[in-house]
Structures are given as structure tokens and as C-alpha cells.
Image (cartoon, rainbow, N blue to C red; front, side, top):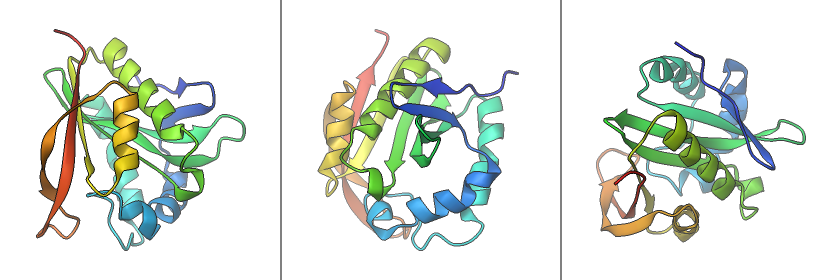
Length: 177
């Protein structure tokens, strides 16, 4: 089975995560401002969680159940976030992403999402991509709309605490009719 590829855009490299990325992931994703905008990034982000998350990626790729990429700046290879296709099954996948707060508002999420959707279409033969964002995070909705996803409705998702619910907006992109 092939190793997960590296993707390049004008400003970014999307590469497989490495164990050495764990401290940077913990720092960026563990920022309360980042965690608050997602339903699945833990806060506090405790020691060992990033290592465990990264360690699972290679097996997920080999099973073709997920393709998770480190989002890095091309100019200096600095890791600034993550983007991925998760729960890949029968041509359907869930899109997820986060960008570290120092890099918000610069179009990096949109650039990374476009690249990973293109990869999913051409290399994974995906027929549908779906995603959601918390209603209190409209910037994420803009990323999804910029990538061509259409809003399909509003609902709730489980919050990080696993008990409460969060309002969310749901989107999809049909790639093959």
C-alpha cells in the first residue's frame, strides 16, 4: 500500500503528520480560541493526546478510512493546522480542519480544504463530502461555501464534554452524480 502523499498549493504543503509534530499540535489546537470553535478538539489538550492522534493516522490511511494532513507553510514548513477526510466509506467522507489562531483570516483553511477535496476526488474517487461547523463559528461556514459545499440544514452535534449538544450548520458537496 502506498504511503500517504504530500500535496502542494500555492502557499501550503499538506503532508502526513509526524510524531515530532505533537508539541506543535498540542500548542495550536490546545489554544482555547481554537478548541472553542470545534466540537472535537479537547480542551484542555493534555500531554499524550496529540501523540495518540498522530499515531492513528498511518493505520487509518492504510485502511483508506481517513487521510489527515498537516497544513504547513511552503515558505518555511511551519505547521499551522490540520485538514482531513475522515470516516471514508463507499465514496462518502467527512471533511474536517482547523488552523492555529495566529494564522486565522489569511485564507489558509480555504486553500487547504480545496486541495484536500481535489485529492479526494481524483485519488480516492469520492462521490460526496460532508461537513459541519458550530453555529457560533461562521468563519468556518465561509470556508465550506468557498469550497463549493452547500448548506443542507441546521441541527446539533455532541459537544466535547460528550454530554451536551451544540448548534451546528451542515453542508455537503456532491462530486459524482
